[in-house]
Amino acid sequence: MNIGAFHISTTSGVSPIEAGYGLLHADTLVATTGDTLVVSPANARIELSVEGKTTSGSIAALALGPGTFDGALRVVDAQGAAMEKPVKLLLVEPGRVCRRFGARYGALEYDLPVIAGPGQTASWASLWKTGAVADIVVDFAAPWKFVLWRGMSYAPSWALANSLTSNFFVETLEPGRYRDCCEIMSDRECRYSHARIVHTSDARVVLHWRYALCDSDYDICRNYWVDELYYVYPDGVAARQATLYLDPHDPAVWQDAPDGRRIPYAMMSMPKGTRSFNDMEFISVNPAGAAAEDVTPPEALTILDDADFSRTFRWPLDAVIEGEPTPALGAYIFRMNYRNRPAVFTAAPGAGMQVRVQSADKAFRYVAGESVEDDRWEPVAGVPTDFYVGVHWPVTRGWGTTPLTDRAQFRDRPTHTFLGFANAPPAATCPDGAVTWIWLSGVAPAEDGALRDIARAWLRPPPIANTRYCPGERAYVVEGQAESERTVGGATLRSGEAPSLRSTSDRLLINPVFVLPGVAWGGVTVWVNDRPLDSPCARVGVEHTLDGERTVIACQGAFPAGSCIRFTDSTSPRHAVC
Image (cartoon, rainbow, N blue to C red; front, side, top):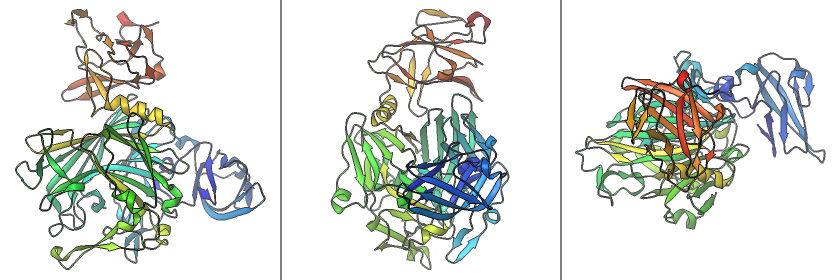
């Protein structure tokens, strides 16, 4: 929560998600009943008054149980100047704070009336007839979450404090035949958008999200469906596989790429008469009561490569910057920067990448006609923000694509800041028309060098003998592991052993993940250069599918170049480690 130039947080770091909400009004302060308030910068003092009691930081001093209370927050700076505003205090039991990695189902609510059309509102409960397992939350050891929430049409999002970042979903549009954009933003009721947990373990979480590219009348554009898989890891990084199913015989979809493949047209450079697709956007969701500028600083987007290129774009953009061509980089790392919370990144290989940053003065509004043939897109001038801000999504219903035109719209609904989008060539195409894009995403480390290390380990994974790297899972798949005795590379393996893996690169291994197909080891000892890793640095999970079992080992740390890695089943008496 912000008051003037000051940011108020809690020592527990409890989030709206842990309190059971997808988003809360920006003037809601979430805390546990035993929490302590913290003000930043620290050269100020804080006073919270609730029900006739005042505290300078200790929530326990208020002697209140869980619930929602009206209060007043006052901050006095080092010069004695005071700022005050009314707040809602939402108190929860300390047990709601979760810092253990894993996925769980739940129901995330919304605390305000929902805008249901011009001049209309509805209660959240009246719009959603769902049970107690409608939404998905992935928890981490840190306060952030990875969330698939109905209010976001299940678009996977990084939740940090009381805001959300989503870079994920495929879209298209076909004016004159389908209304507005064909994407999950048009599916406010989640008629076609569904999410599920496939696997959850100490090593990783696997999520499946399926949706249709529908228009605002819920007509599915040419029967286009998308399956997305997310492999989420304890270090706050996820690999995304997005597969769109296209008609392989539709000449308006396909073009010949420089590498000889047939790929679909990208939305950023579609020739007239073609159908084109977008696979990633830079979207930040602002809670009701917060302006875009409260969440996102002017230096909103930084583009890096995996070497030494770095460029930060500052809003409002001038015409020269917006018209510049995309820098030709060998790899792209996009870092979305925020106030009072960590940045979020996405990364992909550089070949064929197209990037467009969005300025506020290039806003467009969708206007529905009497028939779809009469629909039109009209420019909107004089928007009152430095960013392009959409007021039609998330949560809100009954609005087509509409930019913010009155700053009062920040008060009554969540909004989203749109910084632009990037179109990457697909990683794979199939003869049946299936097209798959692959991206890496996560919570960005504070240092660019550490961010580059994480991205580089995925973009150019160091080769490891007896493995093949799967970028869609961000994992090395071990070849030749054994449940029963067999020979691999001239060595005889007994039950409970896997082949030795040696890095053949001069680069560090950063947080490597290993998948052992065909085995289900309840416990694993990881040996790096003949020394066992401490258990917190080697997380193990077993995944069961119709095709068999596999053991997943997510390692934490940087391992020296040329390291030799091996695994043993620590539950087997023959390989027990004392």
